[in-house]
Length: 221
Figure 1: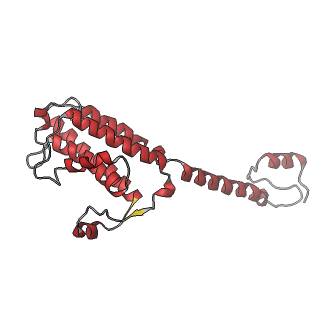
Figure 2: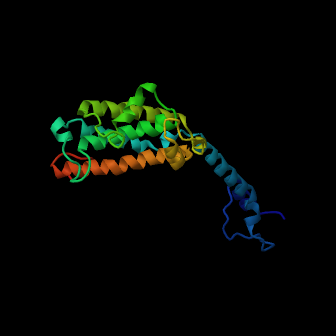
Figure 3: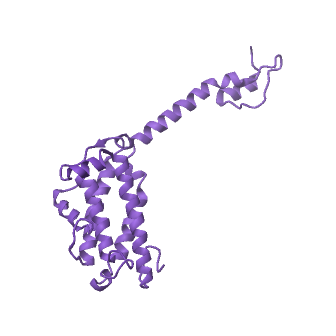
């Protein structure tokens, strides 16, 4: 079938895929779209491959903003303010902040081996693991937030989506009962768990601070 010159030129540039018919026949140009469809498929495959090569920090960039928010609400607090109860039946404001920092180390360092061994003692900041956790000043909490965020950001800058499915066995420092309870965990699960854990407790901090007319993540709630 010979196509009129104007139509042939248009199809050589791109496929219009409009109801355009040959003057001598009623054959739609759709069959000519196949090469372009193949190009679209290749483009999607190339996009998927590019996304697989991107570092995870590309997809978790908002976490760095949230980290800065946490630093800004903790830094100005006095020892007396950190000792205020986060609720009538729970930890103090300082203890909640310690729990956030310790949890980062527990999963990223304890399970996945990220960061310096110097971070390991921060795991013991967690009030859930100690009957009498250390009472830390705001400067120490900020230093802990910054050191642990450096560990997380460095890991996210190195990992790609291809690394998300890697599974880790329970670390040896857990008891046998804890190892059975946790089982293996994937990198994807642990990253998301640490992030959603911070969103949850960051909200708890904001609410508590707002109750005392102090600045939370979104101002005085």
